[in-house]
Structures are given as structure tokens and as C-alpha cells.
Image 1: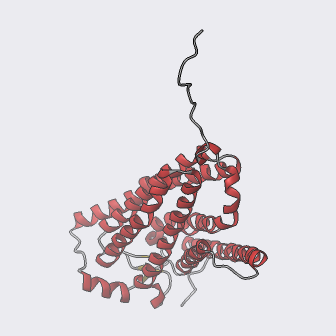
Image 2: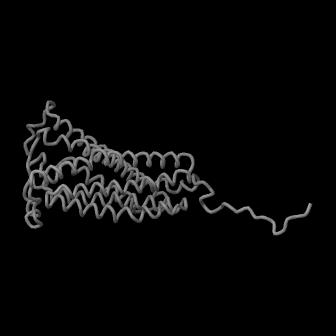
Image 3: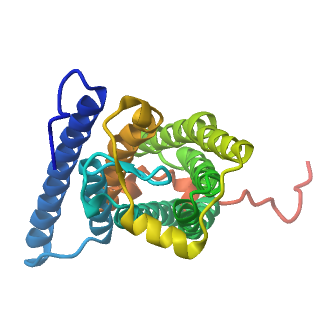
Length: 299
């Protein structure tokens, strides 16, 4: 793999170095979280316990690090390095596993918060997250196999709808907590709303415009067999900023802010035992109704 294109005059090279640096920092934080869980479990049980949320975070963090080292744009089949690891088949498979793990993290944490705060909204949304993301992954595979951007439109619309629901659940949870927990949940709600705004104003319109352009040009999409062969065998190496310009914004946020969110969700187990003290008591069923006397005393 030639690295002659790695020059500070090349914006793509600067962007790639940024992705690598962020990924290295993310893996460092993941290892730190693992050491925290290990120390806590050894202290409490004398043996290392498996933390599901941390395992899911590890899958997402490592998957995103892999995709940062070997970035690619699926439908266009473009990449930075001439290796079979840059094929869409490999990259999309890694992304599918990672994104389902990320969705599972959200589902687990929202379910736990919903139970703790007695919020039916949070519990119901938690049950919908993984099925919605699974459908989005199917749409993504349709897009990359056929090269039809309509699949990307549907995929990212489903991600947007999922986080509309997540934001609603978090907003409903905010008044049911107090102190630091309330602040963190409110920050997560604002972050989810920001994600929805970005997807609705940047990401989904970008793919919709590409789909419309392909329709106008009469582009023929690939059938299933030809598409599967194409995703496994064809990749186009390019270091031209013109080819990557529209991908840089969403990839940069995806491999940084989204991974930080996964790490935060992965650390939920470290603070979960502290949350009951921050729950507003009325949400725990301790509110009592005012009982009126059976008869009204006479004056």
C-alpha cells in the first residue's frame, strides 16, 4: 500500500490522520473502562465479571477504528488503500455488526432507566430500537449491493426516526431524575436532537439528491448476483478531495462523537448502582392519593 499521497498539502491525508488519532484515543478510553470494570469486579467478587454493555462498546469502537484505518464509501466503491480489506463486503459486514451492537447499547440503557424511573415511554422505545436499526441495516445492504441510493435514503431515515424516539424517551426521563443524572440525561437528549437535525438537514438530503440525480441520468442499478460480486471484488482507490468531500462530514462525526456515545453507554455499568439516589421519589410509586373523609363533619 503506497503512502506517497500522505502529504500535508492533501486535505484527504489530514482527514485520515485525524481519523487515526481519534480512533487511537477511543481505544485508549475503551481499555481504561475495561480496567475500571476489572478492578471493580475483582474487588467485589474476586473474579472478573463480563459486562455486556462494555462488550458491545468494544465491538463498536474496534469496528469504527477498523473503518477509520480503511475508510470507504460503499455505493461509489471508493477507498484509500488497495487491499481486499477495503472491499465493501468486508467493510459493510463490520459496520453491520458494530451498528447493531450500538443499537443494543441504547436499548439496554433506556430499558434500565425506564424501569428505574417507571417510564413506559422509555421501556417501549427501548424495545423498538434494535428492530428499527435491523431494518435500516437491510436497507443499507440493498443500497451497497444494487448501488441504488434509495436504500441509503431509507436507511438514514430509519436511523433518524429511531433517534427521534430516543430523544422523546430521554426528554420524558429528564424530570424523573435530579442532580447529575438529570443533567447527563438532558445532555443526551440534546445530543440526540442534534443528531436528528444533522440527519434531517445534511445526511438524508445528500442521499436523496444522489438518488434523484441517478434517476435523472437513467443509471441502471445492479441485480443481486452482480451486486454481490461487485461489492466483494471491486474497489477504487482515490485520494482526491473531490471524491471524498461529501463523505468527510458524516464520517468524522460518526468515528468521533458516535464512538464517544458508545463509550459512555459502555461505562453505564460503573454508575448504575448510584442512580436510585437521583430518582425523583414520585416516579417510584411512593406518591399517595389524598383521601377524603367518608362524611363531612357538620359545623
